Amino acid sequence: MKNLVILLFSASFFVVSCGNSTQEGAQGNLDTIEAITTEPSAETAVVDTANAPIVFQETDTYSFGEVKEGEKVSHEYAFINTGKTPLIINSVRASCGCTTPYYPKQPIKPGEEFTIDVVFDTSNQPGMQHKVITMESNAYPSQTIFHLKGEVK
Image 1: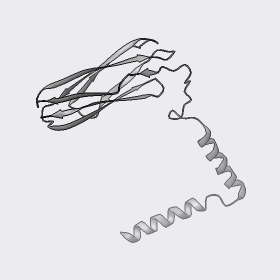
Image 2: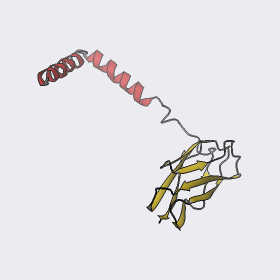
Image 3: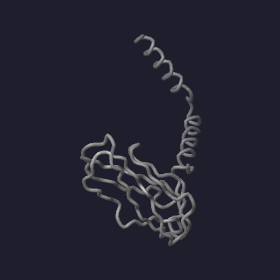
Image 4: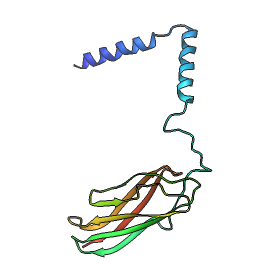
């Protein structure tokens, strides 16, 4: 088995290294690499930060203190779109299945306030808790992170 792996590795090395033996062939590969690395992708798309929606939040953390196990903790996080274009929320997800976020599905106009409601079910969640909620949107930056903290007794 070990010999087979070494044989396959050696064969693939020779095939790759012997593919372009001329200087012209090597330059062709460099041109291809440059073309691949200079074209924008979805991840590196240019963002118009001057006109993008901007999510403003006064505080990103809510501390619910101490609660008894089995209680449901709920909190409304308030935000404002301080950008120049409508904000579209793509998703809001929590770090744990015990935490459920509810968010507006319609676009939020510039200057408009909105809330994301979060409900944390403390059943089977004893001890110190720190839930992270992540909102993905068309804002700049595209991720907004907020936190829910406390202790379940």
